[in-house]
Image: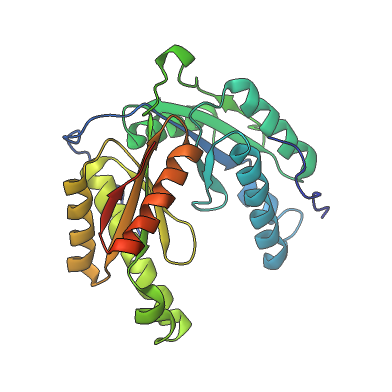
Length: 280
């Protein structure tokens, strides 16, 4: 297997979520991109099973490259399941998606398909993106390669508040877990909080949440208010006994909203509040 060079160009849910009413929140202008490795399952065992360490290395390098390629264009990529990733791509047009797709095809022994979905909520956007890619063929179809589907949010329809990013972390994770428990039990506590928050925000507010390492969870949300974030934090605390805090940012693109959320989270750490909204 040939590994790519470093990038150099700019660039525990067990059942489907049941149908539900639309959330009682102000909507956003969400643009998400579903990134799917083409025919990945069969490729991993053809002509014979490949070493798992090599597959894990490929997945991590692919995620790193995609994170940089989209990140250099003000997007956010979440590794999700690694063979399927989700990116917040407001402001990234179809031509830029095509260039990213071509770059990956030139660097890797696998290709990726990209499907752009838009909607008033993140859940609507990812549903659209998924349906478009499913309509193009199975994820394991040998003749379905480098599909590019969907239309980005048109420039005249974009606003300075299209993206709301919420950055959660665990209160005093080091003192409560890392410095007291063994690593695996610490991991269980962190993952339980993620699973509970992920399900709650999906079912209640059509939001999508992603674990991003350490004790951090990032969610792309519609226009939730402070009370709704307090409710989410209280739900996780009552359900699994893990206490969270959150910084929230709003902007035209994921990077700007994410940085506003990070600064707001630092304010939480400084003054002890559980929910802080940052500047755009």
